[in-house]
Amino acid sequence: MRTEIRQVEEKPRKGGLRTMPFIIVNESFEMIATYGLQTNMLIYLMTFYNMSAATATSILGLWAALSNGLAIVGAIVADSYCGRFRAVAFGSISTLIGMIVLWLTTMIPQLTSVSCSHFQHVCNGTTPIQLAVLFSSFGFMSIGAGFVRPCSIIFGADQLENKKNPDNQRRIASYFNWYYVSTGISTMLAVTVIIYIQDRYGWQVGFGIPIILMFLSVLMFQIGSPLYIKVKAKTTENLVIGLFQVAVAAFRKRNNTRLPLTDCDEYYRWPLESEVFTPSMDFRWLNRACMIEDPERDLNLDGSASNPWNLSSLERVESLKALLRVLPMWSTGFMMSVDMGVFSFSMLQTKTMDRHMFPHFEIPAASFTMFLLIALTIWVIFYDRILVPLLSKYTGRPKGLSPVTRMRIGLIVSCMSMALSAITERIRRQKAIEEGHEDDPNALVNMSAMWFVPQYALLGMAEAAHTVGQIEFFYSLLPKSMSSFASAMHTVGSAVSSLIGSIMVSSVDWLSSTGGKTSWLSSNINKGHLDYHFWLLTFLSLLNLLYFLIICRFYETGNDEISRSPHVADEEECDYRLLPES
Image (cartoon, rainbow, N blue to C red; front, side, top):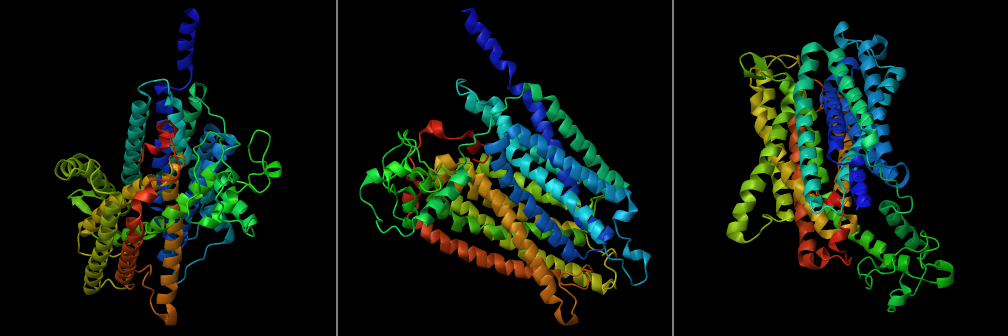
């Protein structure tokens, strides 16, 4: 009896709710610091590095693509090599180093270019050393974000995971709710308080405050180290690497002429107690990866594959097929993120307008993103608390609108937002020209910046409807063993979208300035034509909507069959990483 009591008393010594403040504070401060720097970065690059608006936007797009892309690398490294604790610790320190380097550019004049306003018609170009310092700071912060963001939330769930506790799922669900509340509040503080400090007290203070917050983030996370449950990395299992192994194994057996096989015994299954089934008929060329050609050569004594790069399990083959099935729908979300990225230019628009909300309070130009976040939050609450119960009551659908319907709504509203942006910019530009400000991009136009609130609100609603619907759609088609892939695909999609947006901005800037013409994306927005760029995005968004509707036809005909993946998984196999997004 005493032994049992001792065991019960020893269990709380690691993990539990007492670790939550350290983990949540770590991520919250990291987000405040990072987003506080990124949101206003366009103005900083144009002011202190003499970059054009198009060049600065392209660089920021590449920075976002790198940060999102490295999130996948960070997740793989944490799961397979170093564990989540070391990944978060390393990422936090890397982010802190990047912020310090960026702050030094505000303190040391030699690290930035002299402003164009100091010269008559001549601007000093940036030197390679200045750009190297700037890009190194971006690189450190991207590496940090790549390790912290995919690992921090799961590391927190590790502290609460206790399958013997009947309230385990409720505790974890509560943790995810509070985690996302904290990230939402952090983002709101970043685009309001930090941006206000930068505008009011200058870049040295504005970049210094995030360093203090990031230092506290690192310190808090390390203080809680003795209390953490530190799950060891699983060096033998990695889903991403396993999917690559399937492709390699199928390629190596491309000359095998025995496909299709009818004897189920010739397919490799691992673990051995998995359900018996035959491969699906789509993407049949992948079936070669799980074909056993020579049992003595291909299998170990315990039945496992002797070379996973030459023989993959049938379950892993079907996982790759499930991923390939959702790729077309995944690609329809690129344009949504491209539309989101274009609001870097909106900061230049609102900067030249009357931003007073009250007589003695002016909203910083970069803080208008908060209207997007507010609209996103309102839509989520409205949909979850009002619309879903109404639809459940009158239509019998307990989950409300289908994921495909929500994605369709998001894409339509996104088109509306881009069209409204084009109309509003045309009005703003016309007013600026009428008031004689064509050659002065910094002159204040007699027009309230509140005219831009509706387009932010529409895009926030579109983002909420489309993103949540898309992730839920992924969950419905991917096997349970790949549940964490849904949010991972969204991260990769953001990286691809940022890259596409950066290339598009550079291309539009180059093409529209040929022949000595003024670029649509000129730093002097009164001479440029941002409205044309917004109309181009509207047209591309409409094409993307048409592409989405065509893709939907392929899913609708066999949705039931596809959604019931060939994988047979018990409820106990469902990873808790599914919870936050669903």
